[in-house]
Structure formats: C-alpha cells, structure tokens
Amino acid sequence: MNKMKQGLIAALLFLLLFGCVGVAAQGLTMLTDGQTIDLDGDGVLERISFSMEQNEYEEYDHFTLRVDEEEVSSDGCCLTGFLATARLNVDEDGSDVLLFVEEAGMSQDWLVYVYSFHGGKLREVGALGSSLADLEIDNDVITGRVRGRVLQTWYHPEDYVLAFSYIWDEETDGWAEGPMLCKVPRFLYPVGTLVTMKGDLAAQVSQSDTSTAFRVKKGDKLLINASDDLAWLYVSIPWIYQQDPDYEGLAEGWVSIDGLDILGPDGWVDTYDLMDGLFWAD
Ligand SMILES: [Ca+2]
Figure (spheres, rainbow, N blue to C red):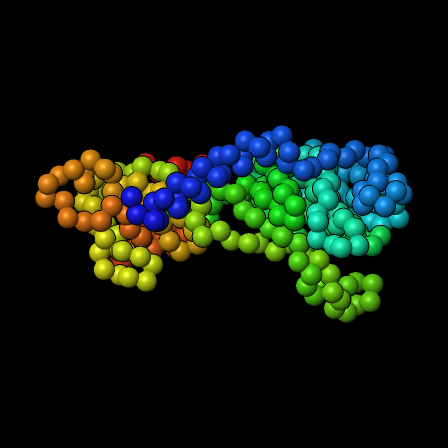
C-alpha cells in the first residue's frame, strides 16, 4: 500500500469519525425572532429581531436581521426561516460572533448568509453553499457540506475561516479593515464513484508526471476515489484487473477534469460521453 493510499484511507476515517462527533457538537445555537441572548459573552443581553417577506409565489425572498439597533437585510431565494449563531475563537478580546441565515434555493441549492457581530457592529462577511444542518463549527473553522463543482452531482465538506481583510464600509464610504469569510481548500475530497467506461482513458502517474499510470478501455470499470473539485480526479483501477498476470500498470493515477469535461486520449470530452454510472440530480 503506497503512501497516497494510506493518506486517503486516513482522511476518510477522520471524516467518518469527525462527522459522527459533529452531529452532537456542531457548535450552533438556533435563534428566534424576539429572543434576547448574550451573543458575545460580555454579560450584556442582545435582542434579536428577524423578519421575512413573501413574494407572489408565497416564497420568502427577503429578510431583515437586527441585533439591538444594528440591522442588515438581503434578498434571498426560498428562505427557510432558520437563524443560528456561533462563537469563534478568533479574537483575543473575546469571542467573535457569527449569525447564519439559511435559504433552500430553488432545488435544494442550500445557501447560508453569514454575518459577523463584532464590537457592536453587524455586517455581512460572506455566504457558503451549505444547509444549517450540515454546518459545523470547530474552534475557528467553519465547515459546510457543499455541492461539488466538477464531474457529477456530489457533495463534500468545505472549510472556511474568518480572516481580517479589507472590506467596503458604507458608513465611511471607504475601505476599512474587517472580517471576511475565507475558503480553505483541502487537497482532496472523497468521491467514491465506480463507473463503466464508454471509451478509453489513460491515467497519469501524478499531477506533474504525465507518464501513464494505467489505461482503461471501453467496458472496463474505473473507481473515482477523490477529487480536488477543481482540476484533478484521483482514480484507481479495480483490484480484479490487477490480478491479471499480464497487468503491468500502477493501481492509482490522476486524470484532468475541467467542470463536466474530462481529458481523454483525443482531448477534452464530456464526462457523460466517457463514463456510465455518474450521478446527476436536477
Ligand atoms: Ca452581549
């Protein structure tokens, strides 16, 4: 077993364990309109106000969130009415507080609007494509479960941190230092989809070594172990092929991907035209 394979298994085990623990301790507190709560732990209660407006299709498409006298509002798409808060350990002067407003989107395209409550100020710091139920806070890392961008319809964890950056301050009409939600990509995300090839494909040895690791032909099975959800698939050839005494290739390799296109022997081709067994929703 090579180091890459060991690393992948360790990563999958970690995800499995972390996922189980996270259900009980995801670090979120649900809030309701009219509630008073000490959001930032300074001993003074804050008053929460949260209201939504419906459109002609009876979907909630606008919300207003207030913490004491601070107010933010935004348009949305199928807002669920769920509001939550969490504290992060990013500030030596005390907890930084985040507030999350959830929307379901048109077809479960989950999105959470994220606001920071810091120094008595309420402001938008970003949004992430996860449901509240899939959101976890671990110290200063916010992890959602987002829809994959390449290959097929799939979901994977995605990490964010709150980092101080320059944001536009409407009060002063200028740039000011303020918190922003920043994505922290992982090297690989688990995929675990077994496909049947509709055409031939060669996997290369590594992302930088373009020599051939192994080849699969039309009708062969191929396991897509993982992806960086950006430019690469980490693939392996099923064990049964490796038992053939004439098999000479490596067990794992890499294939380039760009959205729903994959780099085949004759150039870029739609994943649907090259692989049977991918999952599509919507
Ligand atoms: Ca307080």
